[in-house]
Image 1 (cartoon, rainbow, N blue to C red):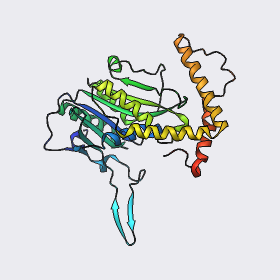
Image 2: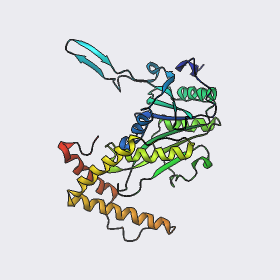
Image 3: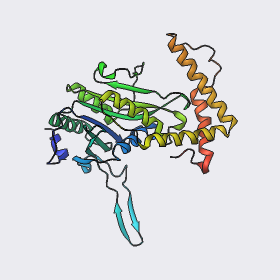
Image 4: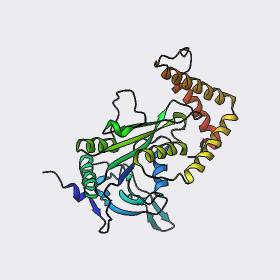
Length: 305
């Protein structure tokens, strides 16, 4: 007999009516190029909010594979950074309530966890669940960032672009949650910001902004950019400064731009057979050169991380 999913969480006794609310989610531990998802989650939780549900991390997390940080001070243990997997209640700039599920991706009981989230979705009358993160792409930072959308129903995607390919990739809890919610008849979707692969290990706020915009358009929530815009402008300025200081790296960026522009032009013609690209370096070759350059800057740290 399976264990009751409701035993995985505790709900606050004073939760208001949330019928029709949106539930956003981001789990730490899976792919998140440019820290796009983490930065956005932190941005959303930077304002007023409160916890309305808390999951039992002792049952879900493998502490030995992801050891929490403890602080030692002189002769005693001073602090323990306990992992939390919780649902927050927030409000957008128009005062509309929405929910945010965040914390470490569970190591165990994925199916049971999905069933627990389903119970919360049905308990609160959630109308849409949406996840977000960043993925590396062979595109230059000087061109518009893209975002891939996927959903349990095609009409949820709207103007957002899906991937044109059929792929098999390592699974994640966020993906399984979306898949299971669709099977259970609930609307769910996800967004993946396209992060230049040479910036995948850096903190890249511009990618968080593109996801914020996609979430706002798809959910109807009014989500403020706030400090994300300023952080993105500072990061872009630093990247451009480093590029300007190296002719070699500038050549790499221009080559990526040509590759990107050729692809877009071919797409607009209805053909992905690009002309005169057989002698161009691959995105991986270009990215590795640029990544080596960035790693050598500022004592090996590259752009701000």
